[in-house]
Image 1 (cartoon, rainbow, N blue to C red):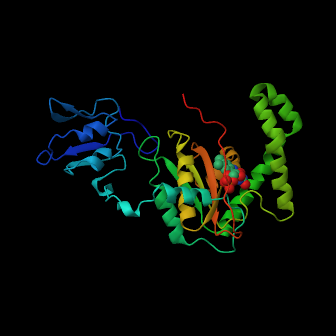
Image 2 (cartoon, protein in one colour):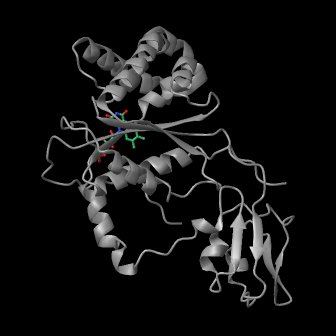
Image 3 (cartoon, rainbow, N blue to C red):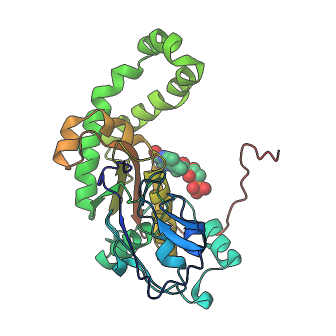
Length: 302
Ligand SMILES: Cc1cc2nc3c(=O)[nH]c(=O)nc-3n(C[C@H](O)[C@H](O)[C@H](O)COP(=O)(O)O)c2cc1C
């Protein structure tokens, strides 16, 4: 049986041009869904082996004879494109420079983000790895300050409605069920953050999406690995940085979207989709003069 995802329940088809195939076996080496393997020096296709063809496309990318065509699971021969020239690829120094110059940006110029740049960000996101092909990541794009403002208004209504769930009394009652860490997070972050959002709104400030001119909500089907939308969002941030835009991941909206059928219906978000993360983008208003050195919690070599 094929691996079911949000978009497909079929195996991809594998076509080998036997006239061109030299049975070198390199496609079988990279095939981890396992329908391609070598038997007595000959390339064999067996779609009943392991998962059958999941449509990862790796065989098409390694074949020196260009004699493999995969079709189905959102893949076709047209998806095989030339590798970018080596001299055009970022080396470690350039990639690290891009990464370390990035800051989470929450102050934006009064300028909209051009549609071409939005397209380029999305194009870059399509290169991200996913738990299982084809990608189940979806993006809700709010491509103007006005649209982001309306989205923020809708989220703030949910924030206001949910405030009681994080009250001191409810938190004490929930402590035995959710544990100390949840209790402490509510006390030190969630309740104060909700109050800051609401008080800020009363004074005309937006501490949720910071009045950004562009926001994207990355979410995914219930079949997807929960990390998929976060990986995609990370790619979007790096792409934005390379295009001269600032960005910031915003984790809080996903919690409120998750419990709001109204928001899901209004923004055409499938009801069962897994929550992901919002990223806001725009031209930075404030210039940072230094980068920061940070440390992870722990790195263990075993
Ligand atoms: C998963 C995730 C969720 C985040 N959520 C928020 C958020 O809700 N609001 C916010 O202002 N920043 C948010 N951030 C941004 C972080 O606060 C920011 O990365 C951190 O302060 C470090 O700053 P830097 O990104 O400039 O290094 C989030 C970042 C991540 C990775």
